[in-house]
View: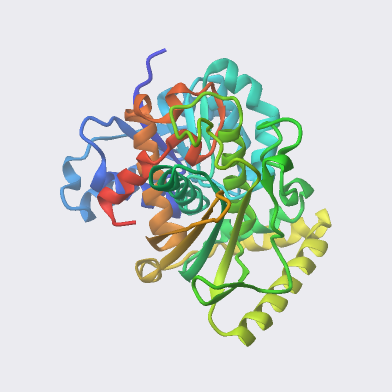
Length: 418
């Protein structure tokens, strides 16, 4: 069936969805047929009218509208080759669109940071996605593209420079001035209600079967003692987004180590990141030792307590509803000020390991950078699928690194220097 559009944004009336639409108003590639989608035609028309008036050259942008939600969600998947969704929390609102995309052969991207949602979707729709040759790529925002593609970049550099693999990568967020809306906070609340979200190997159990711990090592998400990072002179403490990013990076390592054919990297004749087990760690970086130990203890105590309290489904539901009803979001000035800096350190898998570094600088993580990453990933999948690893992969659930490869890095660097 011929699709009307190449690319579609579902949830364009929300804060992040509108940012994605604004990005495409400014940066859509020539010839891209795209649309915005949601449940209210009036709201969608209002967004287009507003962007036509505020974006330079916006009056000439050709963008369509698709109305679909709830019982009519199939209309969204039927309309486009690639569907991007910003509608969360995904654990509560995400499944109908995943189902519709798998059934109606629409490739899918989202910005979720909810491992329990991904585990559930893979178990429920993975087989059908493979049968229908549908590519689904969750976590295509600040969760978890910088962590995932930065790691892939370092592995490729080790291969080119030293002809070896990488056995360990540490990501340190040295600056994180980010904004968050009520949807993001509500997603974190839901995280604590599902034990599968806390399973360190939950995203790896299909690549490879049945023992992912033989391919990757697990570093605890929340730990009371900081880790000193001598290369930077910083102390690493728990980073809240790490609970998702670490699982996504380990899933990439497992997929590359599996027998699935890809057009991506090969290290020593293998697609694995390294010859043994691969370790990925992620921290916030603190310079002062006393502050690091204090913050690490406080953060870990809070997170462990929250995990125990919010595991109670009744209490979890009450807190979730309270946050959702508050409906808060940052203002434009806060988004414009936001930024993040990530330094990644890789150790080669040689007998005498060598060290590689890369640095990533981003816009506001929650809105500015996430919308940019999602839009570029969507255009890549819609217009250049034949040039990325997804082209040679069977249908199913993949990570940004395994499906989009470093070509997404190239596209992001064209617009801003990562």
